Length: 277
Image (tube, rainbow, N blue to C red; front, top):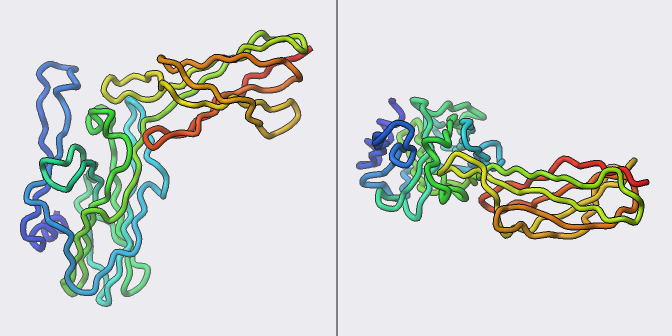
């Protein structure tokens, strides 16, 4: 752990730990989680002319996590210094402030140090791979949303930089959306009832639960075409269900489409074909 140890020594007092709370009973997730904290947290600090120029998390995409499968993503920090970049370290944290009382989540790489690749004699990109396990790391739904990137980079001449918020990334609760249009077939001019359900991962129960009071678009694609057109917008009910009635005009595909929120990604159902006679 040469890089992390060096960074801690340079900063003067940074100590990053992970406190594991043992389970009271097997399978009791509410009492088994990793609660990261930061003691004597270092404020933003820079020595010399080293600079962080770019931060990219998960290739620039949101990190979408379901209820059981672990998700692996990368954090890439690009930095420059006239003497060249020696190494660095980075992780994601969640909370209102960077201290042990206000941080309620951290996603940390198991690598000993970031993998730094030179772009030039002065500039390198240092990358770590992080795996998030929803059954351990995401122990409450309130962790969905914006996380911050803590980063440290140091140069060959001893210059260094620490950033509590070098960048941000969104960690989201995975979503699902279903559709059913009936009856099939249907007589032209008669009503079609379109139902469905919008659900998202509940990290506290490891199940998918209905996403309530959300606007979802009902869309139609006429047979032989490739573009969906929005017909109307319907709000999900108290259990995430959707239901509306439309008039049958021509053969085609019906689907629900959700635009997403800061905590939940956009999702569209696969089109349900209705034969109009």
